[in-house]
Length: 511
Image (cartoon, rainbow, N blue to C red; front, side, top):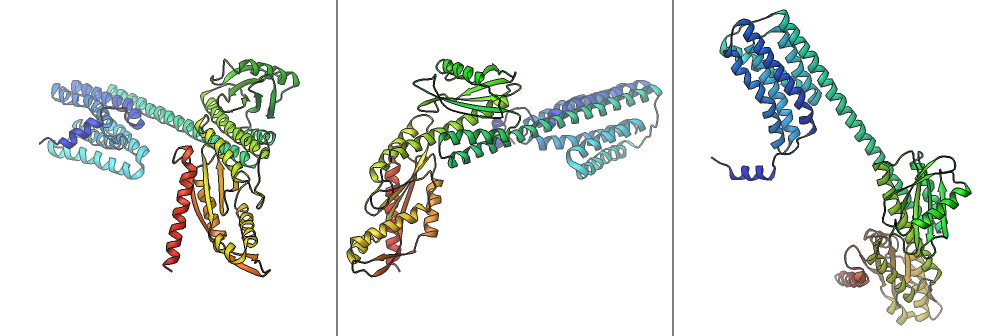
């Protein structure tokens, strides 16, 4: 009966390239079965068995193709090839019985089957191979009566011995090729790990640097530490005046003054026609080092940037690494430039010393623009509302309320990083902007606030001069540009904050 489900499954998994194990064993298997067929023909002709032995032997020529298609059609071609190797043992066991246990052939063929299964599956699979080989040989012998042919002729012995040598050398070549592939794969993985580590270092440097010069210097030092075989340099030129190099840094690369002047002039001429080009060859320095340049095209708002590398040659792995590092470095640089620009124009809240609402809204607008324009930096917001400020004002006076707000502001600052922008948004509302971040950043700070600030006692002075302890409680709401359009992030955070406030009131009401 036709199984429609099986047919539909086959339709979804058409003939495809099988697992590398099936590809690796195809040639040795084909040689082994063809060689055994040749041995069968020789014995049939030498002993006069004729077509009674040759015609069944033709089945040996079909099996390599059937095994390959079995692996190619299987959903798990590696597992299918394991089965094929066990089938090899069974078929060869039967055929050794057909050849009346010709000693040299039986030993060589059995050893080859056992070795193949041992290599791919260890002792247990080799034991299964031995059992199948013996079962096939003994089973066929029991059906056709046992005959024993220890020797045919010197020519047959030479033929069988030469075939065994060729087969084992072929298997050795296959194993050598597989080991080389594994070695290359391990090398690629190690290189990728170095790239990943370098990108992490660049992110850490970006958070710690206080200015652009420090950012570029530390970034290249870390990059050179991760890739000591290369030398690095970076140039940032004003977009409006490309002949002016505003920032530069070098690590592991010897650039003489004439090299810097030549590079500056060359990069200034390249900034327009090669803006979207990949890594470019710049030629050699004064000491004969080969240089390549990767542009930061479209990744910086006010500057043209270039990452220069000294390398013996430019290959695909190096070019991919440079592209990733350029993206990370450009994003970090743009973020730092934005941060410094905002810092220069900062407006502070008179009571708390934090950024005020007007400044925050201008920063938020820049972040919205940064998200909607290349390189598309994400940002996140954490809204906070101080529960109970009106009660403090009503019971203890506005001076006490101001003390309460100031105390809250000081404690909130202790939970923020240098790159986080904390502002007083309203009378009892605070907000934190996280540039170049996703929802994990506000959630982290919210957890810190819940852990370290929630329920703390704040000592303030009432309007009558008496010390009063007020419990600190905050309603929180966070949102990120990874969730909603950039223009809607603040509204979503505000909505979640009021949901949190409502839920907390219900909980207190229930006791």
